[in-house]
Length: 95
Image 1: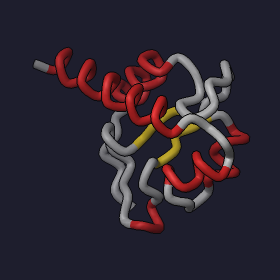
Image 2 (image 1 turned 90 degrees about the vertical axis):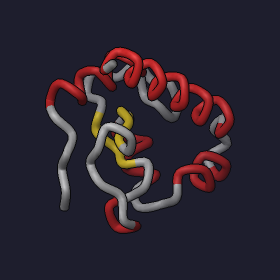
Image 3 (image 1 turned 135 degrees about the vertical axis):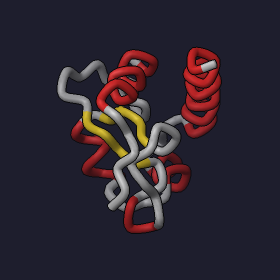
């Protein structure tokens, strides 16, 4: 398993999202969740990891993110838009 996500990057992601990326829960014990699961070719990288509450992380498991969001009646569009905004913001701070 490739783990290219540094501790500093994880802290940046947690701060940028401020909550569970999927359901918005304000949870102290946010976990690293791969948008594209490891079992489907994903890796622990800045672009593929989001903070998730334990409930969402366990529920999503190895599912594809957009289908899982729809099945759970979570706002797929809001997630994708927020993801794009956060990634653009993080890229801007790296320049």
